[in-house]
Image 1 (cartoon, rainbow over the protein chains, first blue to last red):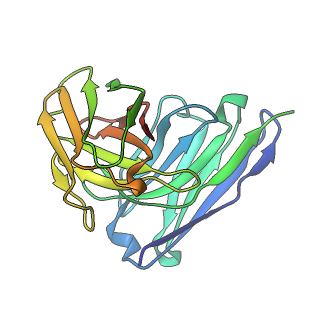
Image 2: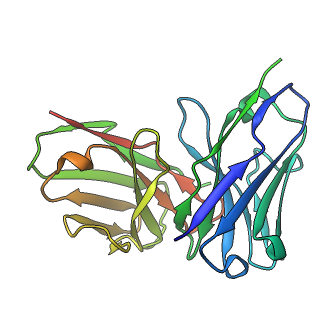
Length: 117
Length: 107
């Protein structure tokens, strides 16, 4: 059974940094594309970042480009999102997710990031 | 970026009735469209991909149709567990984009 467990969320001041982690189990992590998706309070779902199985393919949404970095460690079955220069509009629940053919097969339960002074 | 527009925002339906949810893309996405169900406090659940292929374990009362820019999710006979928010998502282009959701509520 696929399990995705996010951690690392919390309260941070504008301009600060956070690193989100996602521990994966129940599937062959190194075979899967992985994504981070977020949902701000009262807003819709937004795809943030995407990484290929070997880490060679990476996309970031324009809203986070240059500030967020997605990475993975296949030996540790872990996905990461380094978030720098955080802004109030980055406040959201961040979900780790597996992607197979462009759609999301499995989602974690999410971790809340709050950017506020 | 491809904009996905869902309608209506809220759909009031009685149990046992049929519900049809619409999703429109700002440009063609072929059949590269997925539908998700989301209940309060839970992560979204994949229902449909490829516009019409049901995901594993999804009941047959859920069906998807359409291609290009117009898509429909149909729930043939609403059960109590189907009252939720439904999202469409295109994966024809990066960035992947979601619709804003349709809430299906009990009438």
